[in-house]
Image (cartoon, rainbow, N blue to C red; front, top):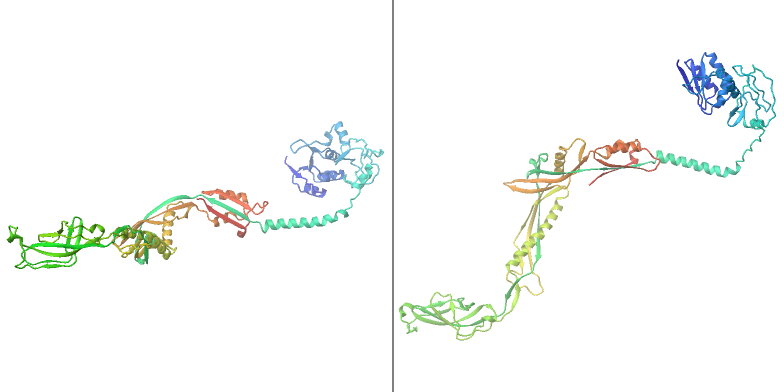
Length: 571
């Protein structure tokens, strides 16, 4: 047979129990009281329950092991069961020994009460019999009071008095003095400040939890490096540009600068006085002979030139050497004195007399010096030589290239991606001061100066970045995105018949598709632990740290203004 189980709450009164009992649709009803059920510690209440069950034609069972409730149930004639599954025990099923035990005083909160105790401190009369007809022995309400036997009345009705008598009556019945009511005036000075402090703490807690609580969410994501390399081309016509296909419009910049660089002269030169003297020049000829100025005469490795020209006329009285056997063939010896000067300065040109000489004259000659040469002195100075100019020019080009690149890059601006290999430096003629072969005055440093024209090409940085991003994302899965495009650059830039080509290279970084907006939407209004699990489960998220503003805050606020998100990409 089905039964209905009614659990009695501590705050339920007898009317609540009777109402639930009447409202039950089952014929068998089990009442399960709590450990301290004050409403059932009254014989009147238990009899009211028994009467209600009888009128409603229902069988009531009280599930309890409390001896006091067992006794009151037996008095009211209500069956008792130890558990919901055990067999109910009727009052008639109790043995004489159990009946004697049931007749013992009821103990409630350590104090003994008879089931028929009166509200006044009079001697209680004992009930002569229980609901099953068993006679109950007389018991005194308290050991300190003198026992008083009451006449047994089998059909006597219990008074409608709850066993929970007020403390004053219990004190009189037990013979104990009533406790003194404490004076609270001396605690008043602590009560008011304490109440104010309590209200302030409650207000602060409400404000900190619902109005000022904030949360900081730090998410670290891992990225993967990808090498990017694509062949691209360029055009000098803006209308022909198609960045999506890797065709970029070239823009140029040009600047002119006059650059100079100092250098060290390494040449040397003797700038002393030149020796000079007179030569007797004889020429075998059949007609007049001219010796032009600048005619070169040499003795050994020393060279001299004629200071001025000389003319020797052929005439009848011209002397011929009689010793010559073939006068007709050689002609006569025509002689003249010629002043000469050494081609270079130096004491070594001061030659003695009687030297052997040669000349660059085409005719046969006979040359001698009857006197020594003099006047030559030695003085060595530093001069600029051609190798010094060449080295300085190379140094000038190298130093000016770096300066020119920097200035051109600034001229383009950050929106343009320069093509380093397109840089050109066209230098004009280099002018040296002092010039080649000239003496370097003491205390001065030679310098070379040249006018240089710098030029370089560049393309739109944004268009290059879009091209790299589109190409990279096309090779990624749907849950990945590009985090960093690296530092793009062009390699092997070439021009051939007006066509420009190069290879675009960079190193991109890709990772999970997580944005601050995604983190915000997945976090608002959720428990911190739940947010931690959701974000940690995203592929590529390495760590999640959520820091609330107060230790008692366990949820992420709904207000985005109170949520701080830090998305960090690991290197």
